[in-house]
Length: 199
Image 1 (spheres, helix red, strand yellow):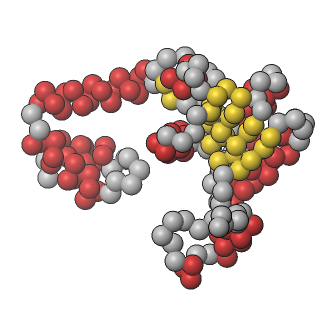
Image 2 (cartoon, helix red, strand yellow):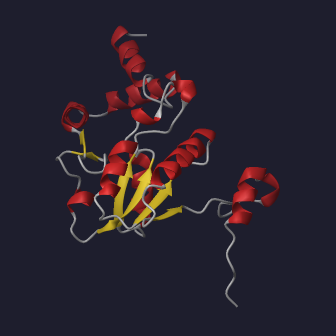
């Protein structure tokens, strides 16, 4: 194998979820592209990495100090949806159902990986709520052990704001899931979050 090809494959294989076989396929695909397209792609990736920053308000990714969501006066600034990562924010935005603000924590509490509450943007969230403008906090955090730990920690911190409504996203059985294959914790959440059927 050519040394240049080996180097390209090694670089692609550094990306999460990309094994050497997929990396080889990507490198071979680049060879089929014209040089101008490859140059445009690499320039775009370089500019993204160089110029991207975190929004000073919600910690979302942005190329300006404030992301488009935080800059939008039509959004409901009294509601904050707390998510772990930017990808979670994008998933919620893609539904086009939520019109409030966000707060990206930057991860979850994980003692095994050395991530404590001070490593996340939890204090920034509390400062935002302390201004008195926030009326509801929606906690949209994963149901992993680390996610539940983070949720419990944030709920304890939010006790200092009794006037603020606190809610979590519904947890339970996904659309299309078969009950016999769903784990007990998910079934428990589904039963606890049940709702009355309109007749």
